[in-house]
Amino acid sequence: MPYRAPVAEIRFVLDRIVGFDQVNGTELFTDATPDTVEAILLEAGKLVETEIAPLNKGSDQHHSRLENGKVRAAPGFDRAYAAIRDGGWVGVASSPDYGGMGLPFTVSTAVNEMMASGCLALQLKPLLSQGQIEALEHHASDALKALYLPKLISGEWSGTMNLTEPHAGSDVGALRSKAEPKGDGSYAVTGQKIFITWGDSDLVENVCHLVLARLPDGAPGTKGISLFMVPKFLPDENGNPGQANSLKVVSIEHKLGIHGSPTCVMQFDGATGWLVGAPHGGMAAMFTMMNNARLGVGMQGVAVAEAAYQHALAYAQDRKQGKTPLGATGIIDHADVRRMLAAMKADLFTARAIGLACAVALDMARATGSAEWEARAALLTPIAKAFGTDVGNEVASAGVQIHGGMGFIEETGAAQYLRDARILPIYEGTNGIQAMDLVARKMMDGGAAAFRLLQEVEDHARDARSTQPDLAGAVWNAAEALREATEWLLAQDLNDRFAGATCYLRAFARVLGGHYHLKAALADPARLPLATVTIKRLLPEHIGLLAQMREGAAGLYDLTPDLLAQ
Ligand SMILES: Cc1cc2nc3c(=O)[nH]c(=O)nc-3n(C[C@H](O)[C@H](O)[C@H](O)COP(=O)(O)OP(=O)(O)OC[C@H]3O[C@@H](n4cnc5c(N)ncnc54)[C@H](O)[C@@H]3O)c2cc1C
Image (cartoon, rainbow, N blue to C red; front, side, top):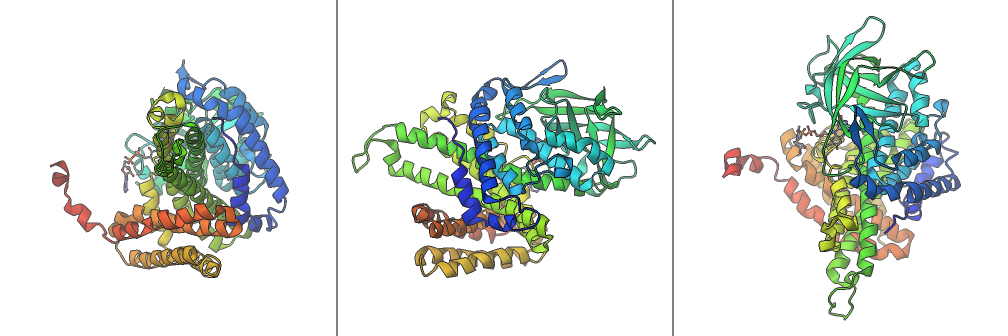
């Protein structure tokens, strides 16, 4: 079943659900008119359907590989990457000062979703470059910007993100990589990094590594970490790739999925690098990149869900098996299969709406400088990442289920979506870490950003009561329950909050799902059945989730390691 780019659906979410017109209404983004956005999405969709999606299966079977210290990309990636590069797709949201299109991040997010649906393994490459571009735009010196940004934005060079070390995963502050000043403004960077996505490739002239390392006077923990630009080839006096730097790919990991994406162990042996941002300010600089990437990964979840849903729907429309009590023979008519398809479609819509609402908030914060928009984006980022990637897995898993035994057989392609999706809740901060971020850092405002958003949900539900009393009432009640739960949460100590964080985050996503689906039903009556499924069948999940959240941590620790081992 070939992937079809869901341009009309994305447009509906942008125009009718998340208020993209506000972005276009700002001075910064006047050029992002509905017609321009439509043209860009159609063009990107065509590229994905014709050049990118056809490579997905092949790149799963013929992995990228390490040959004589160099990474060779999967067959066909050279042509597809060239199409991405030449179309200017890396720099959709990047600064026009350095060759970017200067369009809203929301547009880039929608384009990225389609590319990741087409081939997640390949899309990771431009995604990491985009994160690096943003980090450099915000934190690098003018000299570094002038040298690196044009090449990264044009896609001639690509970027990587080097945080993880064998003993420093979620706890980045434990890293041991070191940077020694060389006395000429550059630094010698030494250390080993693991799990580095697209750590090398033959698709680009140069690979630019952003590496977290500690200066000699760096304090222990995250406060003493600095960020360095460490290119594979040192730029010569004309800014072209020159002498090879002292770094290498040690190996490529053998993985469950995304086989087309080379996940590298990198060794830096006194490699020359340049400081990005202030000394010991590496985490702040890296956070720019990680926030971009967190939403990007959340949308990868949406992307896999879209592709897996299309695949499963096509199979369900075709496969005949048994008879329903009403006499139909297609599996799509069995109530349980219909239940699965309905939940898949409903959650796909919710996850996409949360992700695009987060992107709109980021654009609005940038265009207006408003602290409220900034807080909205910060609040939605962990929800978009964790819920989007959970939905990616759940939909891909349901997709296998709908295929029956054929789902477990590689030839249908359903299994690849599930294998590929499994990394999404892990990298870019595990979903557990996202949930903790939501209930701790994102609540440091006393819950103000959360309460503002819940007020909007309740106001909308109140207005909708005259047309959809049942659905609107259910959404209002759920938002109110979440408001009370948030007040309870804020009164707890940190470990009790952490114990309930994952349940709280999902309950929040459920309430947002009810809100967005209610909006959809009001905007388009054809969407009422899906909204009804969402609000009557999926939204009630928040009740159990919030009850679990209120249990706090104590009961979990009563289950001691000894008892767990019994
Ligand atoms: C395919 C792939 C690509 C990757 N790409 C990159 C990349 O490009 N660059 C890069 O730097 N890294 C990359 N990573 C690394 C990835 O970001 C880490 O694997 C991830 O952050 C988790 O770290 P960890 O594997 O050490 O797990 P751990 O940190 O050991 O976590 C193990 C478990 O413990 C939980 N846990 C850990 N700490 C806490 C805590 N404080 N509170 C509650 N629970 C906790 C986690 O949620 C998880 O469930 C990649 C990994 C993979 C597999």
